[in-house]
Image: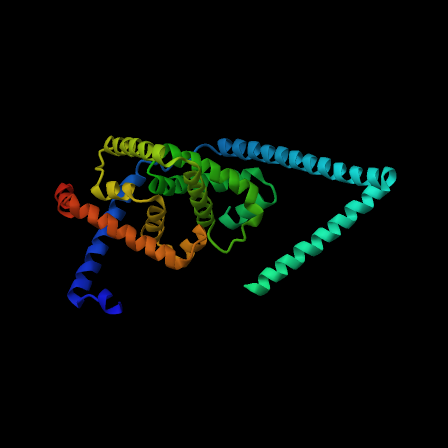
Length: 116
Length: 187
């Protein structure tokens, strides 16, 4: 296999030469393409406004995500408190089910790792 | 103010410093994007997306690489994400018309559209990005690998195969001879 990849030195030189000429043609084309873009940037105010509005959007998104997180957390804590106070049997059953699930899931994963 | 000071101020929330930093790097960023996207509209769009991302992530910039390199890595990843989201079939038609528009823009400035640009435009975007970063901007395979989250070996192979494809395309068009015969005298 390795022998198939070997080229005679002349061919290799020719190949390298052609690749270099391809690279220089690409660079030449890209240099021309650059000229489409003006060297001047928009005004500083434009950038400042863009940054300001971006920060506002980012803050809004953070507040929204925090609100969703708090709502879900309150829902879970509320549910837990309700079951502890009103239905302690159900709470204990749920706790037991979670422990059994963790033990089973953990042992299955360990078995899989050992078999691999 | 030099770039490092501007970055420090921007990290502290100084919007004026941030704006100055962007103003300085904007043409460079758009020029890079126009080369990899071959589409002036998408280049502008991604340049603005890059700046938006930069505002969010400036605290993660550690100053090891140049700020412009950091912008390039964000812009490249945004472009790749955008390509993944778009449908392949529609892409081809849009790319073709965008390239024609770019050609027209270039020719209206009395510059010639070369066969190498056509061949580069036909390449898969991943190969085009790697070639531009390696052979136009001079980044190493390791650096490009870090930008694109791929191994340096994959970058090397993309660059090599991309160049071979361009060379084949140029040979099929009678590329080299045509281009050199079309060059204006004196260049």
